Image (cartoon, rainbow, N blue to C red; front, top):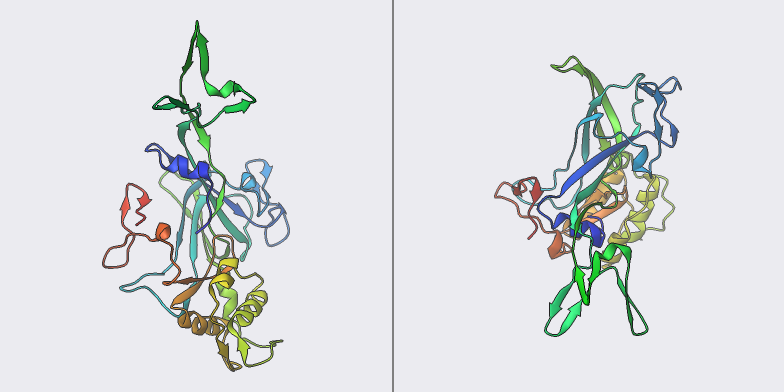
Length: 308
């Protein structure tokens, strides 16, 4: 789970909030097909950037975007290295999106929040929570404070404005299959399915540069480098037991990660930003515990998962 801003938390606390999704497909520059030709949507080349959701496909092109990770069955999974999947349904652009192209979904929260001073009175004290500063003995109110002076009375008119949170990355995936179908409106619909970077851990764990037996954190960092990524800093901060393992022979990197994950009562996954992360039952903070039913399914109210 990513760190979110105070603005994001303020937006989702409002009952009328909603979420916007965008999807970046490909690498930086122009998205090209397998022959190197630019992919065109309408009359425009598709410009992409993995770090900039503004260049991604917007919701007027997307039909649906979904991700799935099997972290829960009848009981929570332990001792696994779990891959997450993505499925994107969108209007079909001209040209073929190449297999193994990168797919990165982004989401941001949108809603109405108080953009005035949020003034309250506590006893004899006037409390201004925003758009107000002190300059010596003077109270300075900026143009967004919604404060006016009528005769000898200072009046505040708090207002709610539509605001947007930061974009939050929702994983990093690689296209596995592509399929074009026709919907009831006669439109060509492209369905993309892909897996996250855990797929690169399916290779044999070979060519190690470590001295064996090796410490678990060194093993995890070496495997992450072989997978083309890094270890999430939260994982290294949590893995403090320093387990030593003998040289694994005839094991894949994913199998070695599973062994280490089991020692910490957890699973390895790829984080929302594409880093290798250990998620342990011993390291779940209260604010990220999700209410689930007896089958391990998330319990939702409206479209929101319930935190416990």
